[in-house]
Length: 253
Image (cartoon, rainbow, N blue to C red; front, side, top):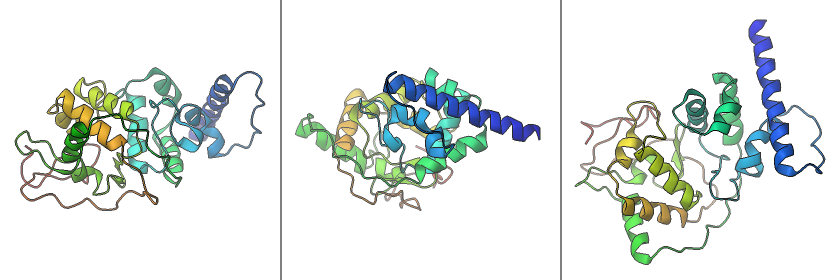
C-alpha cells in the first residue's frame, strides 16, 4: 500500500511539474490542456524543452527523444537522477521518480516513430566533412579510435536496447556532448567507453565528426538495429558499462 501511495504521489508530482513547465513555456495567456492523466500529458514537462512529442527543441541544444532506444533513454534519466549527468532542471524533475516509472517514460518516447526534419544547411568545409565521415565510418587504429558505426550501427541509427542513433542531432549538441565526456561533465557506468574514446579525439576531430553527422538526412524508418554490427577486421571491441551488447573481442585498445 505504501509503495502504491508513493507511486501515485510521484506520478502526481511529475504531472504537476509538467503542467507548470508547459504554463511557463506557453505564456500566461494560453489555455491549459484538458486533464487526461495520460503518459503523453505527464511528459509535457519533457516536451516543453525537447519539442512536440520529443521531436527535439528548436534551439539545437535539447535533443530528440522520439524513437531512441528505450534502454538508452532509461539510462540517461537514471544518470541525471543519480548524478552521472549534470543539468539542474533535469535532475529536479526526475529526482523523485522510481526506476520503474522512468522506464515507462523511456518506453513512451521510444515507441514514437516520427519523421525527422531535414538537416540544417551545411556550413563546414568539404575537407572537414570528409574527415568527419572517415572518423564515423573507419577505425583509426593508430590512436585506437573506433568508427562510430562500430557501436552505433551501420546506418548510425543506434542499436537496441541501449545504444543511441547519432543522426538527426544538431551539430552544437554533438559538439557539447563529446566535450562533456572529455571534461567528465558527462559520465556513464564503468567502464565508460565513450569517455575513453572522446579522450583520444582532438578538437578538430570533434568538430569534424559533429559536422558530418549533423549534415546527414535521416530516412524513415530510422529504427535502431537489433544486433551489433560485426567488428571491422583487426578492430578490438570495447566494453561499455551502459551497453552490455558491446563486448570485447580481445583486449580493449
